[in-house]
Amino acid sequence: MKPLALSVALNALLLLLALIAYDHYARMRELRVAVVDVAAVYRGKEAQFTALLTQPGSAANAPQLAADFARRLPQALDEIATECQCLLLTRAVLAGQPAAAAGNGAVPVADWTATLQQKLGLP
Image (cartoon, rainbow, N blue to C red; front, top):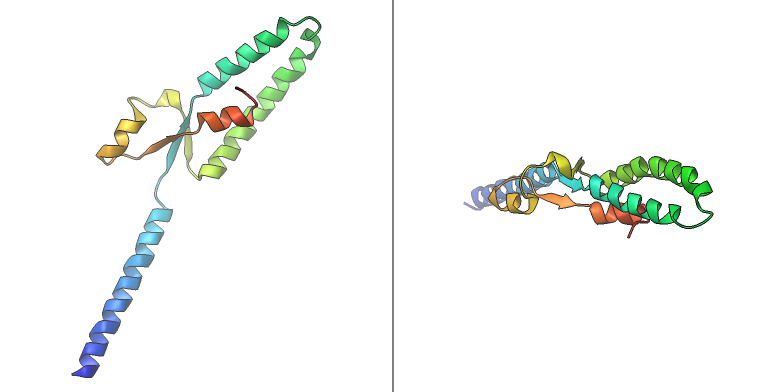
């Protein structure tokens, strides 16, 4: 009787370990989606750029600042995608409210716009 009970307990333990391993593997492969509001970032940079151009003597730096922003934006987006380990989309491609979608079985969507603004030095 004891060998049968030991065998059942061992099989149950192995089954439990297999289920835990599968759950961990399935969660690793789970699609994560995040958004950034690139339009808001552009508007913020445009306001910063306009304020700079209205200051006397600062127009000479304008082309370099624009080139730096054009170079830094894709880098910042790549950094965010690496940080969140997710598919990063612009908010314009979403229809509806991302926060409401998370409750009905849809893929939850995180907003990383504030992080992008911080990386680009925007308020």
